[in-house]
Image (cartoon, rainbow, N blue to C red; front, top):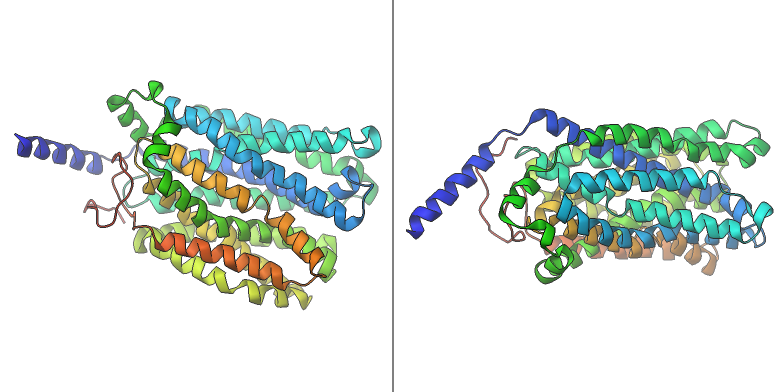
Length: 462
């Protein structure tokens, strides 16, 4: 009887693996993930650039320039501190009501908070209320973003055909790169204005523009179908009456911790390249502020290709192997990057920033978008991915620009402590990745986490 039951279960598993994915829904899920993450990264990039270029003057004018930069980056970090809280809140409902529900809800919270930043009065108008309102908007922006990338990655990984999860899920980070490119284009346009116009209304127009992407993403996501894995799970488990966070705490906390460590160095280096190095180039190297956005644009375009390429290669060579190769490179490169930046050579600076965006910002995370969901079992996948990624954002990207700016101030503009910080955090990510099994093509309907040596379907469509 046991053998018959096992045979039936195996037959059902083969049927699930061989069942063709709905091509239309796969395309819609890919576009929904891409455009949603594009909005998220657009919001974060325009805020990060504004923090480096103008927010210290508009919202923190009563302190020294160096302290103003640190204060602006401190407000930037608030968004990352809010992300785990948003992740806790939204992952609870994502495991109860589905991935689509969360992706629609978080979209409006992110877009609305970004639009509101463009409406804020400055310190000159309302005094201390200006930076407080800025911090509040930044908190709401981060709270909404707390489940965005994880939700998109989980839904797309669960929807993609076997053998194509890496390349399709990497579109989440292609969207992030597009958001960076849009942010750079927006700043390039605004910097063509006279300084007075840029400081009065030009920067506001950038934040107001996010409403266009918000509406476009909303229309796409309303037509999105639910993840087939979540639909299958609802047939077996009363998801509305379960406590997802309690389940992940009981069964998945070990891998949540590993994802926190895996993402620590990656998040640290990603936002060091995207945010801190803008300030470093302007205030230490002495490059012109108009030089930065075009470099960001070139880097973002290159990064969009890198994200898809690394995701595609992970379908062939494996998630673990690709992540180890990329993080291993990033352990060493910080000690080469800063001497290159300090030459002041426009060509070398551009090459370094492009490298950072391609490998640290989007290359590794292009693999993570399928790697992280595959690590967890079906019962708490969304919660596990979200908690791991967003708690790592506190110790990673959230404080990286602030800590790098502080280290630079403490050590008299010496880049060495910053490079050590980047390398050590990435070494931790490398070692955490080494401790995990390969997850390529595992059955996502499996309720338990990935294990060493577990069976893989033989019908990968690569």
